[in-house]
Image 1 (cartoon, rainbow, N blue to C red):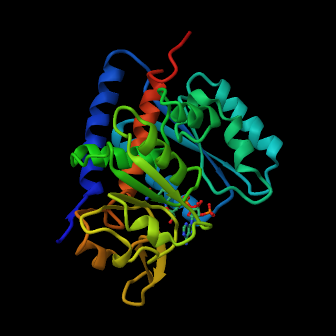
Image 2 (tube, helix red, strand yellow):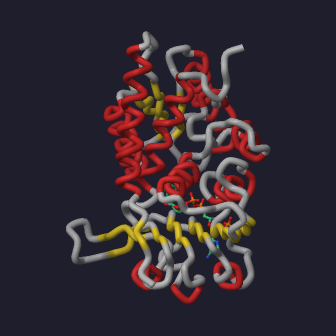
Length: 297
Ligand code: NDP
């Protein structure tokens, strides 16, 4: 079997074009253009790259944005004061604090200081909690993007055995919650694996849907998957490659070439899940502007 390719770039393009139309209709109806406030602490080059991609996405769909730059020496108190001012600013619809933060700052604390009604990353405990009880919420962007891909390609989820490798708060855990809980598009029987999982293969081999978000290149090999499985590779890893100008290439967590011969569907890296994550951030920002998740009292 040769897997069909899940083209995240194509689906993200379609999604972004629809969002652009939605934004323009919202503005034509007399409403203020949605506004996303990004907070960057320090100058981590990867963070700068990710913020650049998010800024370009905002420009493409017509969402206003700017980035507040704070030094990497900023105290927790100063950072939370800045966030408080954005929480209280009625012209700010969405707030995103780019992670990771310098080690003296607690990401948990900082995320909790964001008004959950403006938490367009979907990381605030209120939004994660609402996800868990299957209530309207800002869904974490990467899992939400993966569900858009399932929907676009009509990949069934209900009653399948889904295995998620990786249990982070931003990808693995919300992915597992959505796969298992969501009435609308989930309801898979779900297994979640992490570093302490014994005999990873004994779990991955029975997956109808395998979502891998561990950040470990080549973790999942063809012999670890079932014939015909749907394989979603979330990992983005830089590995040295002298044949490229940059001296590295991006790979996922899966042995793509070998797994492609055995899976029914597979996401490439790059061009699979990544573009969908940014598109879902745009969607959440528009939902925040429209007060769709948390209507005004
Ligand atoms: P984290 O490092 O926060 O989490 C990784 C998770 O994988 C942890 O739960 C960890 O277990 C688990 N893990 C690590 N090694 C193994 C292993 N050998 N076997 C089983 N589980 C393992 O990473 P993120 O969740 O933030 O990101 C994961 C990957 O996805 C990264 O490559 C990241 O770059 C990429 N990513 C891609 C996005 C996209 O849009 N495509 C968006 C976000 C992330 P434990 O909990 O026990 O430590």
